[in-house]
Image (cartoon, rainbow, N blue to C red; front, side):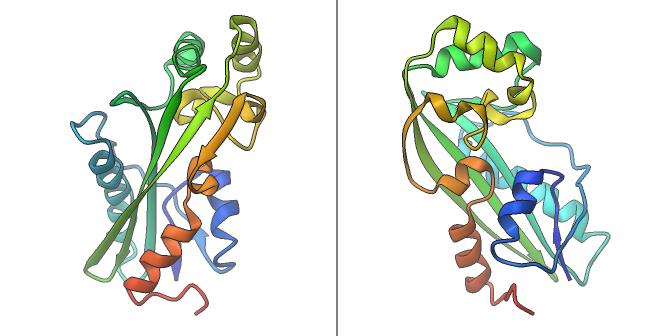
Length: 187
């Protein structure tokens, strides 16, 4: 059995590109909020999520993921309300940032990890455009306060790297990690 340790509908949709036969179980693991190394933080949180579900399902293959946004070395998680979302988007406007997703697969007593980094370039945004976007509510539960596949599309000038990583689950990297671990999503 394959379990996705995430309640994110975006991750569910992306995982369906690799595998139809999985179940969802939302992790209650407490996430680490800060670290010196953003990539290590994303991997650590993905691992915590996967392990919390694997403990209850020792015979399953459990996939955990954690996505963060990084601007000039500063980690942006989910915003603290409307004001936090406006602040984050204002800082991201007209700038390049990185989206980092940590991946963890727990299978038996083994843990396999990887990460993906994608550069995202935001064009300029006016204060009014930011307020209008935040008012939709979409940014309030997203790392970095935006959704590539949603209303923020109009602000993104370009990306370098895996677009599915920015949505929250880097499918190519996950497929390669599973292959290196000897895990097939088709079983």
